[in-house]
Image (tube, rainbow, N blue to C red; front, side, top):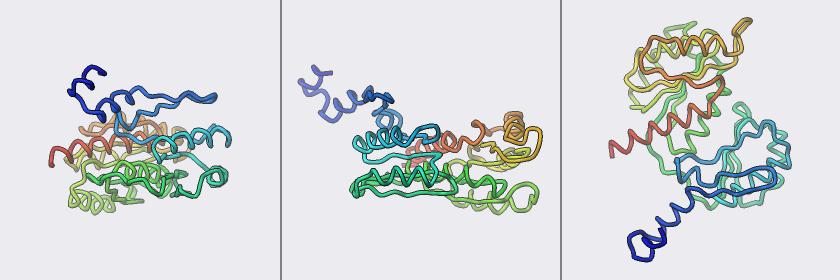
Length: 253
């Protein structure tokens, strides 16, 4: 690589990009992957759950120093206030109490370039908490987001306006959030010509009521084009949808 750089075959920017693909930062409490966004196009996402306040502050500050932004998931309002107090004034925080997700930005950093669109459709109001987590990740990856909440199959007529509007907006993918028996994902997948990502949510009653029933039903779906992530995995669904959207957007442009 150094030979290619000295001979002019590659630019300084390209050399830096190649070096950063394997960049890490070792800390006493963590080994941070500093090159995920350069390698995958996915911003850094830190899971707050299970981390004490001191560890979370160190990890978040390290990523902010490196890239100027970070997404923090599963973070309570109390933990966010403790984190916010440790940040310099140049950082701004956007937070969803429902989704327990925060985006922290350097006020001077550029926002992601907009491309593509994704729909979020929930079966019930209880599923919005997971959908909000997805929304924050999608917006940070540059996607326009269209949300349709509480349109489950208990009132099947509610589904069709959400599907029709999604298709009118030419979305690249649809993420469906459903607990209980999780049937909404199969229904929507049977109606649309774009990939559908099913997110089983931990809502419901009794046996299988913490998302296991919805997960099993979605995995057993006979509707082609439906793929499924783990229970309550709004982050994984959002990243997959954003990558699909990015590829489709590039093909159109």
